[in-house]
Image (cartoon, rainbow, N blue to C red):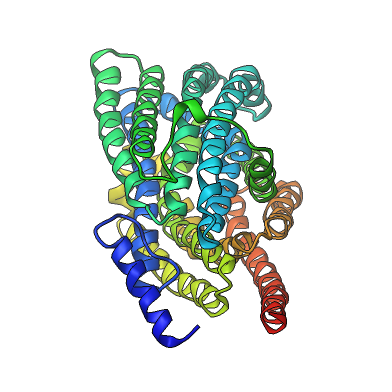
Length: 471
């Protein structure tokens, strides 16, 4: 194709995307687009964590440390049960983005309707699993007796909202695949504000405690899901959602599972290791649980920055790899690593600098604060290391290699952590010893994932060059 034709194509694409929320991933400079695409993703996740933090802050300030521990002790367990199905949304993102990159518009609509129906099914499955087995798992995690009843109550109400949670996640995956990361952010801002006010109302006015924050979470999840679904129902073809056309296409489902299932299994096994770690944290009592939960909020927010760039890497790589744009794929990974890790380091440094101010938002209990600050030093500050495996792993998924980063992450992070807890932590039962396993596992996983990325990238790009030479 001549340079003049390329320029005309770029101009047409730019006109198409001008005035919309969608990012043109196939043409033009990448750095600014990656940042503008990843920023709403990061902000969305950070806001979601802030709204979850509001649950903790409200019960911690207006109820008790036991109530705060009850909400916090559920985090690893909730993630364990939803990770498998949330991972499928990664597959949905890759499938739709690939169809866009290949220009197969007729198949996009079919994929959209498959994704939404799959979300509904996954939501009810997770809801049923949560109600059936979560209480038993809490007991297996050595949840303290003074926390157990409240934790069970919170979980039972929380899982009722899972269909809404899945609809939001899968619907957002569709919007991200076509370059729109702003709509999910807007939905989250609106629902999150509602969540905060409902938390205050249910806990302070109605005195519902942990039940109140769980009810508020379900209502806000319903609002965010409704906004995303209504937006899709009003979107232009081929992305428009028609309720009567909801169906599962076998071909699309297989592709979604091929990419999303390994990602979901990775998240599930990762969460399983965190459940084991939570058992270790539980051994330090309610103060240890509450302090760990408070500190964890800030590491989550740091992680969400780098994860925003990891998600951007998946989507940008999917479209450009499907279009055969080798050099752009290389640049996507390189820029996501550079910008993502730098931004994450900056956010972590801010949290650590103001650690006592931030922690006191949740509690004034000095014992709880001590545990929280230790976690921030050992886990929040080096959080950028997670990007060394999340971003190349995202690039591999964008190239339809989802199993490799899953295996690496399971071995490098999950299996290593389980061995560490069974050996090092058992021999030295100290809180800081438990925390330091996080950065160690990140370094191991990051090295392995980068080696795999460059090896597979070389093979895939050689295949594309050979196909072009033959053509």
